[in-house]
Image (cartoon, rainbow, N blue to C red; front, top):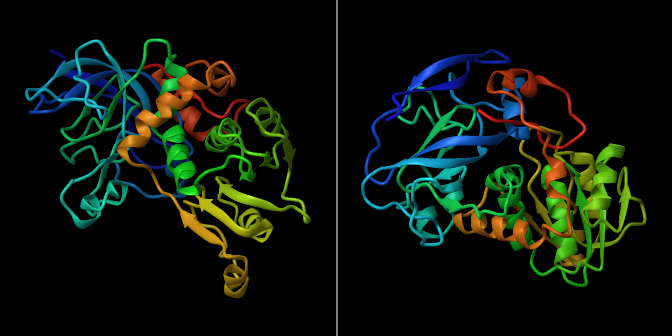
Length: 347
C-alpha cells in the first residue's frame, strides 16, 4: 500500500514545491488512482497569476486521467453504473457535491451549496490529494468517475474531465444546432471542442473567432467553416458559444444574434469590464442568454463518448503537447501560451 506520494504543492504565486504527501487509508467508497497524465487548464494558470483565488497551500490540477490502484470498501461504481476495478483508466469530475441540498436535489450539482472541487482543496482540508499534479490522487465517495475506453489515448481523455465535459454542458444548454449558424468565440481548448461539437451536430455554418492565427488554423481542422480574428460587423448567427472571457467579443456576439438566438457563456470566469445589454433588443429579438459553469456527472460520459465518436474526423491528440515531468509544472503554469492549447505532465 502506498503511504506517501510525490506532489507539486502550490504555495502562492509561482511558488510550487515538490514534496511527499501522506496517502490516507481509503474510506468506504473511496478510490486511489495513479495519475497517468494531467493537462494544464487555463483556470490553474489564472490561480498562479492571481486572477482567481483558492485555498493555499494546495495541489492544483483537475484535468487528469488515472489508473485505479486501490478501492475502498463499498463497491464504488462509475457514473454509468459499471463497477470499478483495479487497473482501469478513469477520469473524474471537477465537482464533488453533497447530494442533499436544494440545488443537488434539483439536479444542479455543479452549484451545490457546499461543493468541493478536485484540484481546489487545501492541503489541510481532509482532501489533501485532490489535485492531478501529483503521482496519486484520492477520489472521495460520491465523486463522479467515468471509465476510459481502451482505445482512447490519455492525451485525449484527460481534457474530458474539464474542457470537453464543460463543452457538453454548454452545447446541451444551447439546444439543437443542426442547420443553425453557430459562432464560437475563443478557440482555446474549450472553443475548439465546441467548434467540433457544432460541426458534428450538423450546424449550417461554424464561425470560429480568435485573434491568434494559430488558434484559427486549429479551428479549421476541427470543423470551422470560417475563421475571423473578431466578429464581423455584418455577422448574423443563431447560436453564440462564448469561451474567451472577453467582454468586447461577447458584446459583439450578442449583437450578432438573430431572432430567437441563443447565447451560452462559459468563458467569463475572470474579471473583465461589464457589457451593456439593451433589454428592448432582447425582447424584440426574443433572445436567450444563459451561463454554464462546470457540468453535471452525465457530461463526463457524454464527453468520452463524443471523443470516441469523432476520433477519426478530428485530430484530438494534436491539442495536447508531449508530457513534461511533474517538477516542470511551475514553469508550465507560468509560461505564455504554447503552440498547442494544452501542456501536460506525466507524474
